[in-house]
Amino acid sequence: MVPHPNMLWLVGLGLVPLTALIAWSPAFAQIAGPFALLLIALACLDAVLSRDLASHFTITMPPLTRMTRGQADQIRIKIKSTRGDKRSFRIALEGGSALNSDTPDIRGLTLNEQELVNNWHCTPHARGQFKLPFAHLETPSMFRLWMIRYAHPVNAEVRVFPDLRDQRKKASSLFLRRQQDGIASIRQMGKGREFEMLREYVRGDSYEDIHWRSTAKRRQPITKTYQIERTQEIYVMIDVSRLSGKPMHTPDGEPAEPVLERFIQSAMLLQQAAAQQGDLFGLVVFSNKIDRFVRARGGKTHYTSCAEALYTLQPRKVSPDFESVFAFIRTRLRKRALMIFLTDLEDPVIAETFVKNTEMISHQHLVFANVMTDPEVEPIFGQCEVNSNIDLYARLARHLQWKNTRELGLELSRKGVHFNQMDEVNATTQVISQYMQVKQRQLL
Picture 1: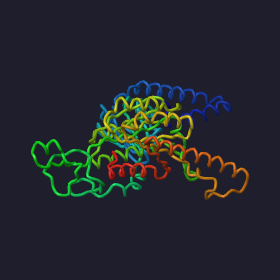
Picture 2: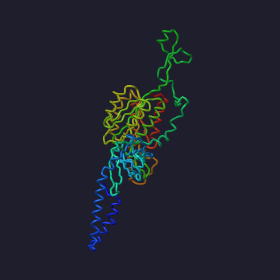
Picture 3: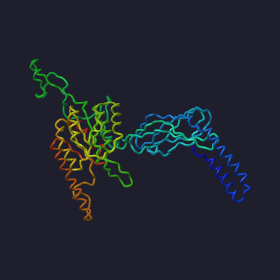
Picture 4: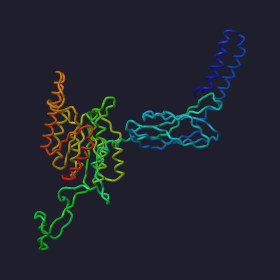
């Protein structure tokens, strides 16, 4: 309960001048005394009669609201009252400031009936999970000398997911046009590797496709036919260790986002591409341990499960444990699958651990290692000019880093791992392009 502006006006324009006049002439004490007593009596009476006024209101909100980062949205708020009188009030949400709303509270609301529905507008600028435990209501007292405030529990939750609009536009050319039956048309090389059926030999069939046991049994040549694999398993391995928090390079004046943001966007768009191709998508999130694991499946429900597993990810201040990650893959994922790692191997110790343990899965699965590279890392005699000794040493350091990355790629290639350096702008497009090439060439 706080003073109403009416009380402040009464005190400021009535009681304070009368008190000042008492110092000039004691005769004004006969006026100031009764006025002060009357004001105190009215304030006390108003406070007693209005102490339970706000408890007659009931505020309800949806228990779960999903939003997209950077897009304007709203939360539906419903206010009910057991009193039938006309009353004005305002509402503020505890925890709503985390959603960066332009209007932290809703003012000027008037409840003419027993129920009022209003929308709280906000534009979230950070992904994650936000709790709204209470809705604070403020309404004037009966004599309008106090403002009654009441915290009503609503236990609402807002989930903000990554914004994929810009990355989807860049990768739109990779999502090829669909045919009338809804299957994307991709020209695939080869005849397929999954056995379909047996049929009689036709001139032109390869001798390696003849099924000799059936040929001997039927006493005529029988050929095996194959079909292109459809429901293959695709897993994205996201590294959320300390190097995933490294900021990306952005133009001056714009906030720098961590590399993890691009990893999450790439994984979510790759899932859409896999669903379009009829493949199963899975997810493994790791740091110094396996943080989250979603087995490869398909369908809208599974897409929601993967999005729920990704939207709250934050970089952790630990180093990745690739030994436990590869051991987990070796023991839990027995079927051959496409493993796309989104990680950072800039640290030589981390890179050495990754290379050392890749042999645990490279013979069974198709492994791609994707790392985000600094656009300024290039050979010493690149395009950048050298104007001073400081520039020369900086160029030399970048050259050594470029040399180490190149040697790392060659070493991984010898172990059967495909190594790819992604740039920060087209990282999502490059990841989806990898997947499309695997499908086209039937590498899996």
